[in-house]
Image (cartoon, rainbow, N blue to C red):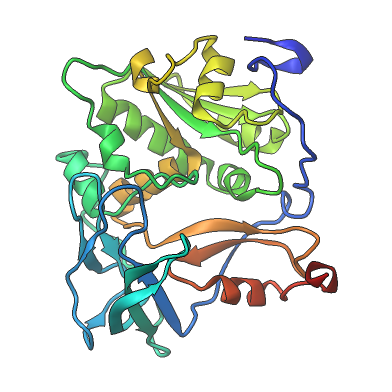
Length: 324
């Protein structure tokens, strides 16, 4: 572990241009609901979910529409109130045709996502409930969250590590979540600590996000520590983050669990808090749309299943330079 240049880090790494200036200061906006959403039954690592709705069925926003297809699989919920108009193969982001649920949005619905009045932070039967809520890692891999909560026999967790580095150039969605929703991030971290039987949580944030660090520290506690780390790529890779903060290396071919740690993303932590305290399933996420090729860069809360073309259109489309 190196501590030069103001904070701990791993050896080597690279320093690409950050290019975060377009959106780092822009608050999260809500993306308008589009006329039709396509929800692949394979949205995460593991087995595809299984549709439990039929064509022609009306669904409410937040209603379960697909059940887990195995242990490493999660439920899906309707991102909008509307009607199921198709269950058929549609083009998946992986380039293949994948079975999908297509929902046509009800233009007269308020699209309010109802909160569960009985949600009070109760962690009973948490693994099963997290799976039913459709919660997955929001850092990019979309690993089902309940699997990380299922600590194998003979293993134990001492530390929950929350990844707030966001070292990838251009991206600022995690940054804005930490700035705008620090209570949810810290609350979600505490929930993970309790569920895993750990003794502490540590949130690692790159030092180019001082506003995020300050926001998190303002609501942290003795259980949750905020740790600033150097700005470097790939600081956000979980093994690099562990080495930076703790000076320990995950064994080759191993997992953070081998060091009695579990790593989650800040967006995942906030979503866990939303579920246990408000009863909200995962039906949307924050994305960054940015770069010189975007007319109006933004951080957006986007319903799952929204076409990328609609997101780009809402951001003013591509600039002339992007077409060259």
